[in-house]
Amino acid sequence: MPRPTRRAAPLGLVLDPAASEPLHRQIGEQVRRAILERRLAPGHRLPSSRLMASELDVARGTVLLAMDQLIAEGYVVAQAASGLSVATDLPDDMLSAPRGQPAGPAAADRTTSPSLSRRARAALRDAPTFGFGEAPLAFPTGQPDREAFPFALWARLLEREWRRPSWTVAGAPHPFGHSGVRAAIAAYLGTVRGFTCAPESIVITNGMRQSLSLLAWLVLDPDEAAWIEEPGYVGTREALAIAGVKAAPIPVDGLGFNVERAVAAEPRAKLAVVAPAHQFPLGTMLGLQRRLELLSWAERQEGWIAEDDFDGEYRYTGRPLAPLRALDRSGRVAYLASFSKLLFPALRLSYIVLPAALVPAAEQRMAMVPARASLLGQGALARFIADGHLATHLRRTRLLYAARQQALLTAIEQHLAPWLESASDSAGMHLVARPIAAIAPSFDDRAITVAAGRAGVVVSPLSACYAGRRRRHGLILSYAGTPEQEIDRACSILARVLRASTSR
Image 1 (cartoon, rainbow, N blue to C red):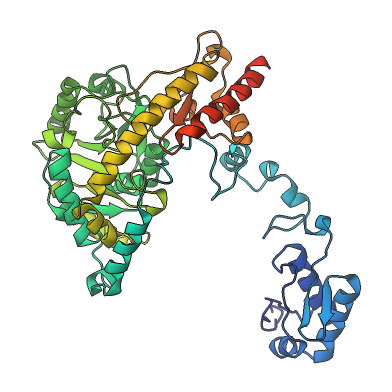
Image 2 (cartoon, rainbow, N blue to C red):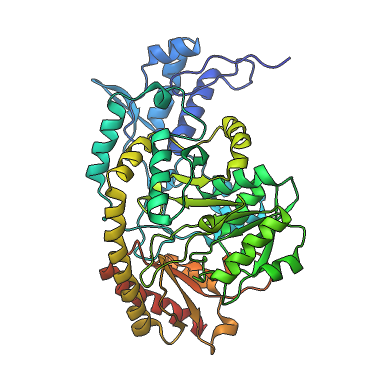
């Protein structure tokens, strides 16, 4: 029979009356461990001995005996007016374990723990030195400007939306999301992106991964294949893996995605995932001829196309070609986009415009999905779009980001020319800097990424965007979220990193 246990006290203590260790020692050891692991912070006031005794169903003298020992050891202090509390002057070496983790060898080396998978250890090894919530000096991928978004206006829109929300929003929302924001998006796409769609075909998601995994679940069976661009966005592969779909990487050339090459490599694929407006990370724009070839393939083979328009709003020269969705005459294109990169990342709102034939099945699927997009910001976003604030924000940031791209090109030429070269891009929020020919064979972009992170500069390795074994190296520098005055300083720091790394 299992041993009986007592109820938990306010500190989370659980006693085993059948254990050989006396109850007062069990209490003392558990409180001591909580202090060393920082679950009880210095100065934290402890429950009274009467309350602890009552909750643990032990004599008050048992609790007092445990507390007296902790006071003698210096873990706890007694104050006449306020009772017992955790000591505030404990030595740092006693509290060296990270918050929430035990001290000792298990926490000493996270990257060699036998309990972690190889990919988990690799993630820890390559992680930058700054923590979550900290702002790096420069070049974080997918980050818009930190100061450009009108948060005061956003707060007013949120307050208006949630002062008296309808029950369809607060209590029984549609699985596709807020009807107002879906209508606003449909109107916006008709005006700005040049194609019409019904609000009922738009699904609000919590990110591109959810959008793409939904589409793959709808049109492909497990282990069927989908073409992806090589190199391409890492999240594409992750989204297909969520849906149990095989990713078939197709190398892109100077003209973008090549259907003929894709058919030769994986003829049974029924889904193509492409970014025709501005390919990530190389920046290629898919020309009209190849767009028509891709649409023709989808119609002939009854295949599907996922059009990822992740930063199509940011074009600095010339007029963009119409989206694939605007050219689609057979209902084979799903259009994916996100507001998180346009407005602010914590918004976590993206959307997919589905072909009409997929809408009924998508409703059933999304009704079963537990982690749908939050409704808290969707009503405010609907007002933000409908009242013209999105168009204003995009006009302002388009000018801002164009200037930042030019500032980055100037800084690369001034500081990084001995190691890297780059060229202007007519669109987007990032540039790719490639190693010059003399150092290209030995250039390790992952090692540079780690070293730069330690120096406070965030760059992304180009090689991580490749799914296959043949990879090119370079650095992805995302300039949209980096103020101009920081770009030059960040490139100067990156130059020191490159000088030290290439000399080795």
